[in-house]
Image (cartoon, rainbow, N blue to C red):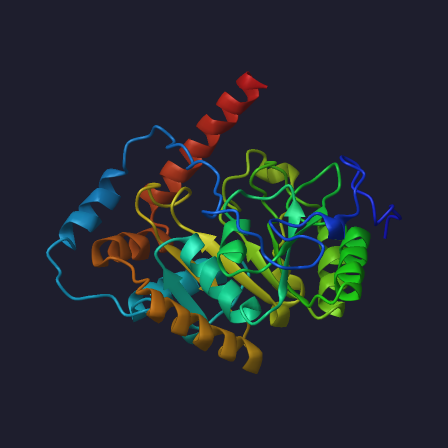
Length: 318
């Protein structure tokens, strides 16, 4: 692995383990009022795909409630989506919810709600940390390499874990992204492998946010791998459909859990949390999500056209 100075962030010179959100050196949460959050993502300015509108409208008259975690048809569609990407799965290892934030909150509560600590890259998506803060858990930011965001530097990760444990903490969860928001970069496979290897060796469970994996501007110039392809027993994958597959105002997301005894327990606990929150998908949105996850030509054609459009706008702005 490339040798770096693990205890120092190149941007601010502070030890990674000292930069925590809303938690002081004595590890007691401070009273900062409401949970801070970033601004909502802007809409992409594109009209809703007519085929999606038709599916949603056809389901608008249904009065039955979706079961917590998703109906069988939706879970089967999610299995097909991931199988086409090399991640085999079965419906009883899938959970659906009204957006990735609800799923991440449930996963965080299941894995770290009993006093554990959470690790995230620096920088990271603005919506990741507030759910840990909502649960009263500290978040430790680990610097990423200069060439790619979303995946922490492996040596910085190991040093952060060591320091957190030395201070009496219990790091248990690492959230990362191979197709990163906000840096719009893709971590190279060798870096991802080193980081995942380091994290699993330290007993961390990984949550891989793969919402934007199908929106790469130069897909033929980049090799994108999921951490679940490397260590399937230690990685939960979360994909938010709003953005790449559904309009931003139709919240729906799916999570894929490891096919292990621990994965089964995590899946069951996440369903418990979703049940307590009443976090169910609306039936019309679930119907649209099921259609989108099957990736018919209208959906894939729109996604590819939108990615090309965004790539041209980004290149012009740059």
